[in-house]
Length: 272
Image (cartoon, rainbow, N blue to C red; front, side, top):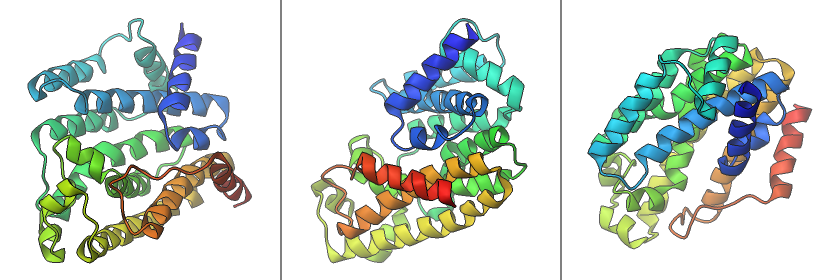
């Protein structure tokens, strides 16, 4: 059952992860399977929080997910794989709980007054993934891993403005919208103005600063784990570079990297 469960979470990761799968393919099999289990759990949280159900029903499902963290794994592949990975790698329960808290927050909060509020959210939905994964990599560096997770979430926020708007969410801090002279009507219309570019340039620089700090984690990882992390961080950075080159016009859909471009990033990570 455990082998089949891991096969299923790895299949899900290959199918659904935009950048994650390219990194974890560099890991030895036990670590790769464990990271896939963490991804599958995070994907489940996201699918509930971003799904079509009313917010109240989403919260019920998320609380059920929380309860299952301390219950027998049962027969569902994701829970079987995650329970085994938690036992082998001591993945911290509080990181998984924080992911659920972030999902609940998405049902309750649609705007963020300032970056302090937004950062707290990023700690839950992405910093927690970093803390869960670093236990698998084998380094006692949860803070660096959390910072790296925040960086990747900040890039997601830049990339997914239009998608988040459809879900009724604006993650760009409200005080920064005001400071740069951007109105939510501009987001609704998909208007790229000089003010928009300045606002998004500011977001991009903050993401890069967090990325640089988070990537200090690489010095504490074994070679294959470092190559894994460098790969998906490099893919996120390349995506952010593409968005900037296109003038931060993120309203026509997220930019995609070609398989060749992704493999170049993998090669650079291996050569590091």
